[in-house]
Length: 145
Image (tube, rainbow, N blue to C red):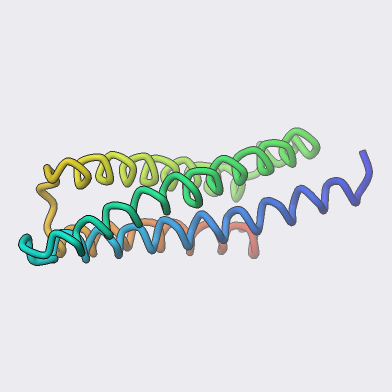
């Protein structure tokens, strides 16, 4: 396989991860705005629901899928990585980030039905999970301890 193809996959992976992270971090911020919005501001709530659904369905989920596809393709081409400790930690964090994204999707569905019982404070805390995972992933990739 050509080095350019591998580097193209790596570029796709990096851009997809950046998009995924931007989407998931902004999504939780929208959730905070939503739960803290005055219930009598129907137009604002309606707009937040639309923004949340579009961000999740058009950016966040597709970016996550592209990240996985490019990452697994690179792993297929360089399968020795699976035996390294740094990659195993990174993979665990990526799996956790994916689960957090699916949790965000569940919260979006709850909010769309006005049935979310999480507070703004809880959502702010949950929003730190992707950031924490991102830091670990970046450290693993850069330093490869």
